[in-house]
Length: 405
Image (cartoon, rainbow, N blue to C red; front, side):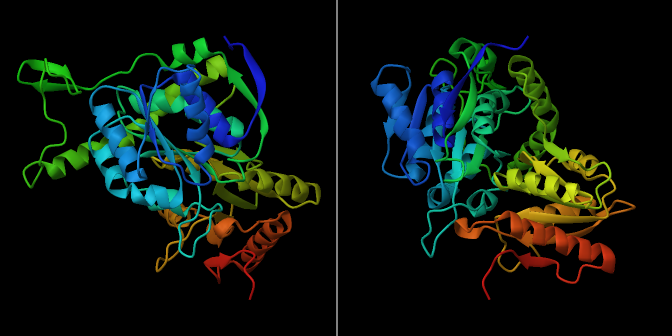
């Protein structure tokens, strides 16, 4: 049964903070960085006003913020933090530690490009740099998706079959600072949905115990792990990430029951008979959808696939969504200096490589540093895809959209 909801005007940062307030985690440790600052600013107000019972830890850096979350989570607490860009880069060491120790921390990332040169605006270079750190990564198109992901992330992270940290990604300024109507649940319904934290079980000196630090049932978390078992533990981590696809889908179904909003790993749009299509992440996909509608009205069989889940990579869902489209463009706000293409392009091509009938694939890097990707630029991408279809070959595997010559 769909729960009672109300409409509130929230920007993406506020949606993240409000959802986190409703969850009321035990510890929030954070350091401000644009364009994430509003999240921890708002949450600190909730703490000051007595609306949450969370311990708010104002630390001296992002490295310390995530370190505090790891310690809190290992002790059994629910822990949350938020960051962006260079702040996420400063956390790099601890990203791997949090994931390797299987701590179900939730972190909001208001995606912003990495300096230098210094730039405070959006692209996905920060999250893409962290893609192999062992965090589940969700990407949002709008403030509603930020709210939904920020509630759902706790159930995903703490699921008995997952026990991994979750990163909720949304475009800096484009979403973080843009107010939209957001349907929010009642506090009680959020708390009921999230429930109590679930712990993995491990073998301690006193037999099977919960995987948390407890003086009464002492265990070690994060000890030295050299040649004997490190490889085996990494394989366990990789297999758990792969297996999380099934568990996340189950959580999505539960969330749909209380909100009425259907959550998918990928969202195909007008793909049934598409001859040219685009796949991508984040806020830009809303603009792509509008362009697809315009092109359809003009007789062009255009389509698109929006990805919500990037880690674990939803291989089968993406294959099904792409279907039999003959030409596919990957639009992404990231790059891989020295690589054959940007991250999403490389992974999409890998997924499609073994198909008996695979589409031509071209990479369209756009929007770096917050550069606007206009509807006209997206039209140009589709025109490029049509030329590939007519030519029967991809002459330029990687293109830069909207760059001045």
